[in-house]
Figure 1: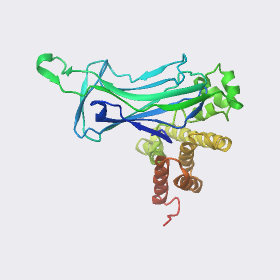
Figure 2: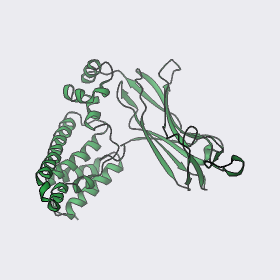
Figure 3: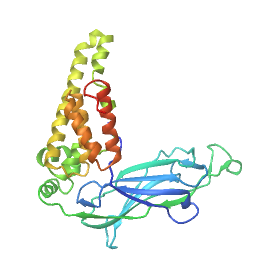
Figure 4: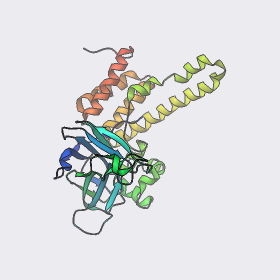
Length: 319
């Protein structure tokens, strides 16, 4: 259901050196101030700007990989978080990265950091040389890219929780994100509850695909009438899920319209409302996103949903 992390801060850099100059490396965060215990959802991207095709060896322990790091800016002892991509260690796959090729990594890079100022960075690296499995290294070395390229560092602050956030933080021993269902029930307006409401994180959402599954169980029953009772139950469960999600999202948005992923929540709410046949309400949310969303991605997908509703005659087409 989920597609891309909404972000507003973009930092762009390429490290010095011949190998590093082959890549544009970026790290993105949704904001610069986080509450202690709040997920720090980071996105790292790398783009081939070398002007030539690069051969990548994908595989552990030393193939092409991405990693995030987070450390205190004042040099004081801290978590020194490092998150490295985990790859299947069974040999290498070789991939051609043509000019403009890009790849994205997404991680929560907060490892129970204490309040303070931190620096974060994303890097890609690879070692070599590499050979085809079972081949003689003397005869079959492959000219793969090796080296390290880093983004610039971004500065972020982690602050102490207050109000409802502090109640949730204390109730769950400093880790309310690990008790998402309980936090959502007992502290429904806290920052942490917002992430719980998003079911693990706003990575992707395809509104049109969500609507297209409506009625799929009943269409299945047309082919197999004996399955009708089961299909009716499944169809009912899907509808109930949309009702519950619509209620949850609407209530949280009313309490916390400033939540960092509020636009994403509005996009899902518009999708759920459309699933329930509340087309005009859905359309109003979509039009709002088109004009006020901080990221083009949410605005674009709201437009896709609007067009889908109009094409099916559920709302009036607008010129």
